[in-house]
Image (cartoon, rainbow, N blue to C red; front, top):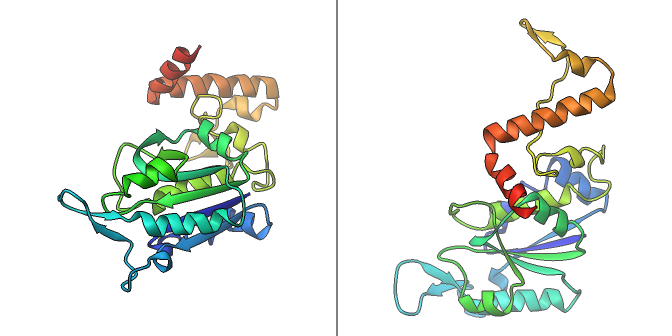
Length: 230
C-alpha cells in the first residue's frame, strides 16, 4: 500500500511515521508513506499556497493551482483509489471506514489549512472527505496521521499478532472489554478468576458480556447505531 500526504507544513508529520508500528510497517515494505510539501508547486515567486478569499472575510484560503499540480504529478505516476481531503465537515472516521481503506492500494490525503481549500478542489479533485471529530484543528496534518495510523495497523504483517486488530474496539460495534496482565494480584486488587481459569469458551463469553456492558455504559450511541442498521 502507498499513502501520499500533501501538506504545506511537512515537518508536522515527521514524528508520527518515524517510530513504533508505523515505522516498522515501512521498514518491512508493507506500506510506503510519502509526505509532499505543497510549496514547491506554487507558481508565484514567494511560493505561497494561500490567498485572500473572494468576497472578503477573515482568514486565508488554500489555492487550487498548487494542489492541482501536486495531485496531477502523483497521478501521472500511478492510479489512486481515493483522494481524501481532511475536513471538519467530512464523514466521521469509523473503524469500518478504516477497514475499507485498508483494502485500497494507493491513497492521497490532502491536509487543509487556514480557512480550508478553494471549493473547486473539493468539487473536482477530491473523491472523499473525512473528519476525525466534531472539532476544528489548526490543520489537517494530525488528522491525516490519525487516518493513516488507523489504516496501516490493519494491513497484514504490520502487527506481530494479526488477530489483535480483530479484537479492537469498534470492530464488532462494541468497545473492547477490560484487559489485565501480571501480577494477578496487586495491592489487594485481583484479576477476575475467569481469566485465570483456562476455559477459553467461558473467557470469550465473559469478554463479550463485558464488552456489551461497557458499551451500554460508555457508548450507548454505538448500540443505537447498530440497531438502526438492522
